[in-house]
Length: 261
Image (cartoon, rainbow, N blue to C red; front, side, top):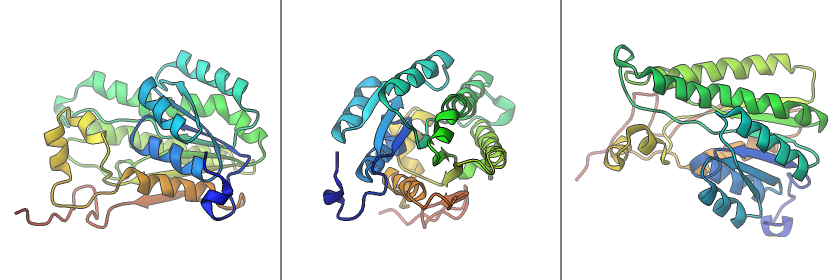
């Protein structure tokens, strides 16, 4: 794990413990690295064991299989965490996905249900089970990775935007409910980030590449650095919400694309 000397500055996360979900790739994997480099002891969870262990092992983090859509998996993860870590300071609820681009009139209800189980109820499950430990630390922090889809809509995005709108409502409600208690609540709302997100959504690498054609999207490290910054503010500072888009994107559908040769 990177030391304070390696960082060249005070390691503000030293002695603190962070949990990151969806940690096997993309924003989650980048966040594991960013928080470990900031001095946190990091516990990563994801469904895919091999890439999860590779990411966590590279920075001295701990790995455990976790499916946030499965209550039993969440319970096993929480029990493992209690055994391995004394305190808990930061929970990054990052696990989530989008499925398809069907119109609402043609929606695959099972796909919508699957997204809701992960993107909304998965966040609720893990937050519920870990919140007492976050509060007991005296300086807890729940960071939910939302999306601009939490306050914008676009054709073909009904199922995904519905889940991110729901997550936004749950996050804002949690912030109010925890007022006066030692737990901060933050939502990070990214725009276009080039990860495997679009491959999963569209099921085709060529189609996924076309999403970012002619423009410069964000990368996973951009969002991970935002998460790291929020988590390392003084404990009296709550970054309620941050919207992060690439320069080439103004809204979900207003994207500047350069001419291709």
